[in-house]
Amino acid sequence: MKSILGGALSIACGLLTIFAGTEFCKTLRFSDLVSTAARAESGCSVSQSAMQRAVTLALELEQSNGCREDLVMPAVTIMLRAVDEAAQQPDLSVWVDMVTRADRYMKFALGCSPKEGNYWLRFAMLRRLQGENTAELAALMSLSAKYAPVEPDVLGLRMRVWLSLQPVTRSAAAVALASDLAHFLQHAPAQDIKEFAFKTDIDMQSRLIDARRE
Image (tube, rainbow, N blue to C red; front, side, top):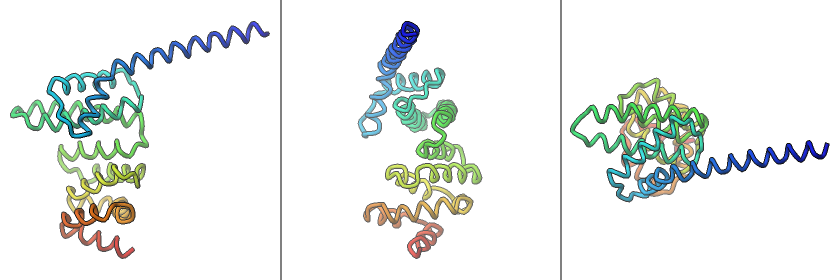
């Protein structure tokens, strides 16, 4: 019996060693992706070659179905940054192709983490670039608010997206927007609230007044 248990433990340890080695190799493989995303997030300049390399790695990650959060999130950053950069190109087809790739990647990211509110928000931002489908954007924004109601960075970015949406879309997601406004007024720094109020249109001003009365 002891020999059987000992053999089983040896096999288990061997498998764990192989798994750990595989994950370490994957970390090294995608290190350029992570470092480039970090530079982009911090506002540092990123060379075109570095971006192209990072996009290639992001698509490789998608194809491998590698749902490691420490890799999936940096790739989200890269894909959306690539869409922004493609929008600066005179050839519209370049932007359309990049949007298509980013759209596919966001579906992959959401498949990995369907309860990640940040991903739903980024997906909403991407779909907003393709036109404002009221029902779709209302659903995506509502899911983001559901899964990341008070995360400061996500909430702050979501408030900026709400400002960009049409009143009809806001109305379609009225419950989520009202919740966001309440959380924003409760948790955001006073200066952020002041800047947000300054940018509101008549529709959002009315909603903000209602939220302050609650």
